[in-house]
Amino acid sequence: DVIKVEGPERYDWWRGARAPGEDTDNLFERSHVFNSVNRGKRGVTIDFSTAEGRGELLALVEDADVLIENFQAGVLERHGLSWEVLSERNPALILIRQPAFGSTGPESDYRAFGNTIEGMSGLTSLVGYPDGLPTMMSNAMGDPVSGLNATIALQAALRARDRDGRGRCVEVAQLEGFLPMVSEELMAYQVTGELPRRRGNARPGSAFAAVVRAAGDDTWIAVECTSDQQLEALDALVGDGLEDWAAQYPAEEAVERLLAAGVPVAKVNAEPDLVGSTMLVSAGFWELIDREFVGAHLYPGVPILADG
Image (cartoon, rainbow, N blue to C red; front, side, top):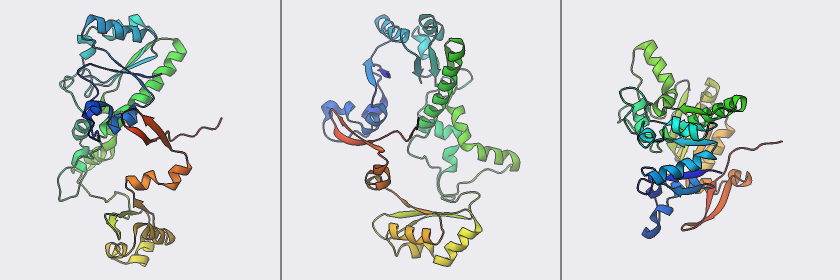
């Protein structure tokens, strides 16, 4: 049972993001981004800047296994909800804290979003073409990476509590957790002293990598050769003219021809391709959910199958 707590004025920003349709009266219930990642949760509005609100939150804490927060460092303390207060109410509580830049240090008071973390980590400087500008990845990579790190930290805290019965306060700084995304470039700079450069679709360690247009309206294929044998197979099929060759065929046919020649390749799918994917449909991946205000839609399922 997961309960999402929002403030009456400072609610989840994603509620208003990319909300389709013209139903402005229910705008904050229509965001497909918010709905997709919050399904299966209960929700409650609590203003814990008031004594009544703090009491309501502490009442939830009494029966909770875990409390997760990603406020700017110090927000809970300023509202009388420090770890000492929370753990006194529930000694077995696990508190997962996700400040952007940690709870101490010169930047601990800064706030951030996923794209902020991406930029601070240096990843933005690495994405794009050599002659182009630094480029954000547009999907706020800092958010899911932070969530994954918090999940790992939570599993460790739960395991420790199983041994001794005690709760834990665990901090997972978002920037620090994101830096492994650029660890290869960090190590290369320390060894060579040279700044990593943007490389477009090229990949270090690959003999060849590219995304090229196929026949049709905005359809593409992604090709990558990781060995001389694969590169020779590509050259034998298309010579030096992969772009001209691919433009002759629909993406599906180009993929079939390249795979038959032993060249790793895939179609660059768009959303309609994924929703109609026979592979994903046959795996039972999509879940049809009828949600108030937006109706019935397919939502991504859980990509885990367990036997036993």
